[in-house]
Amino acid sequence: MGYRLVYLLPAYAPYRVPVLDKMSEQLDRNFCVLTLKKRYNKVGEIALGMGDFKRKLLNGLPLHFDSGRAFTEGRGSSGRVLVTPTLPFTLAAMRPQSVISDGFSSWTISSILMGFETTIFWEGTRHTERNIKPWKHNIRRWLASKAKSFVVNGEFAKEYLVRELDVEERKVWLGGMCPMLPPKGTELSVSEPAERVKFLFCGQLNKRKGAEHLIKAAALLKGFSGLERSFEVNIIGEGEDSQALQTLVDSLEISDQVKLLGFVNPADIWNRYRENHVFVLPTLHDNWPLVIPEAMSMGMPVLLSQYAGSYPDLIVEGENGYVFDPNDEEKLAHLMSLYVNNVSRVTKHGQKSLDVVKPYNFENAAHVALEALGAV
Image 1 (cartoon, rainbow, N blue to C red):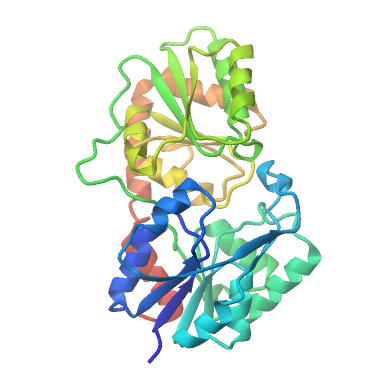
Image 2 (cartoon, rainbow, N blue to C red; image 1 turned 90 degrees about the horizontal axis):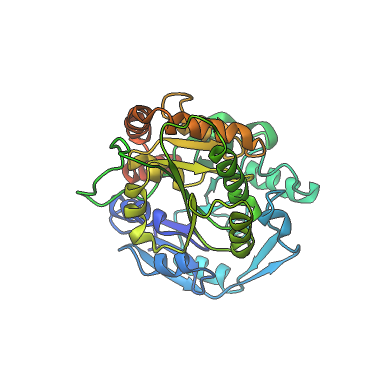
């Protein structure tokens, strides 16, 4: 007898692990994840050793057919095909009743061509997919017509499927994404700042994530007259622009206000959230960045870019944060000043974040996926 469900997931981060464990538990472990043996970043290597669910590791080679610059600069998605010759043979031997596959990938194509009932997990928005090639769009439309159902992370991902690929709304299940949650007993970041208001950024240091805009906004904020408190901007992450961003901080003479802290192990991130007050993500191109609900689950208000696909789901404007255009650095500086000049807003908005993010937990995410598959 084959598996009841196989999840085709070439790579995953730690936040996926609790959902996969819960799906496995609800299916009496008649569940297996097919994933790549080789990981290409530190977070992926950490995730591969986590979780109690069954998994099979495959060798694979990603072939890039563009330079990747459009993606790192926030102008489009990366172009690649994952070559995994053993996938069809492995999948055939597992004989799953159903398959869930990540995105419109070559693995999804294999599953559908082999005749398996396939649900697609999808994250992209009309903004992130705005520059895809016509041939790629046509392949997606064909795959969408063959898929049993879809699991998406938010309203913008659903909108893309319905409006761009003509997917029927009844086939789209909303809410399949959730963050890692802080360990029990973790002190939350909802207390009123005593002295400095601390803003936190966490992400890759490249043009796509927009840290440059946050640094420039911090320089503008420093020049505001009549600030009631001092402030600090802490930037966590590493990437190709690390040195350029440090040079920018030095040239703007804001090294007392802006600190580049480098890579932080995922297990330590909760302490970083707790030590800061307001989370800022000035991304130019993101589907549903998990740092946002993570920060919210720690009781942080959020300043979120309008180019992040999660803002309709997670931001209640003026109640737990604000949405902004990262290219308008003066506006971002003004929004930051609202917290610097009224620290009670930090606590109030942080409490609202806790309420808004509550449904985004791994039990609900697992249930949504299994409902889409017809497994519950």
